[in-house]
Amino acid sequence: MHIPDGFLDPAICVLMYAVSICFLAWAWIGAKKTLSRLFVPLVAVSSALVFAGQMLNFPIIHGTSGHLIGGTFLAVLLGPHAAIISMSIVLLIQAVFFADGGISAFGANVFNMAVIGGLSFYIVKLFSGAYPLSRKRFFVGVFIASWLSTVLGALACGLQIGFSQVFAQAGGIAVTVPAMLFWHLIIGIGEATITTSLTAQFIRVKPSMLRGLTMLREVTP
Image (cartoon, rainbow, N blue to C red; front, top):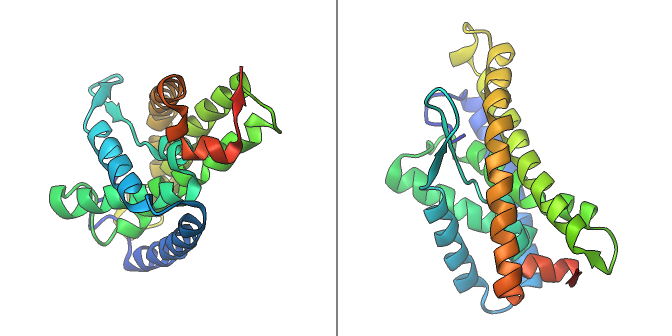
């Protein structure tokens, strides 16, 4: 889902930078209000964890593979604001040092993975219901939010690429959107399974680390 340089029209790049900067400003203000002085080391460790997780790929079919995106996991771990910042750091390191995603397309990649992934926290919150929270509803919310954030990110990516002139002659969004959605409907299942499993392990071992869970209040059996 990392868009490289040269795939997007300059106007789309500028638009996505503007949108992502607005969300990052909102995330920074929210994170400073909700997180303690441990904000910086917590985000650093979380970013490193997701960065390492994205290195592990799982096969699908026909030589296609998927990997953990981690947006929803970060949202449950840190809350929506810090999750957006943390994922943006991961994407920046990948773009600058590993050429995984272009600099001109960085705003689009931040929106597709960091912003959509971070905002998926509110899907978890919606499914979890009111206090006291049901453990079953919470995990269903995590699974659905993870899958949906992957699919929505793929949809946004397909639209951004499809509306660019590079793919206009190839069919535009009529080709790019179905292609992105088809594979990411499958990849999303892997994303949701990994995210739900990781969240369950954190709750079992050290639930106090889940800042996002704290924001939802305590989960009961």
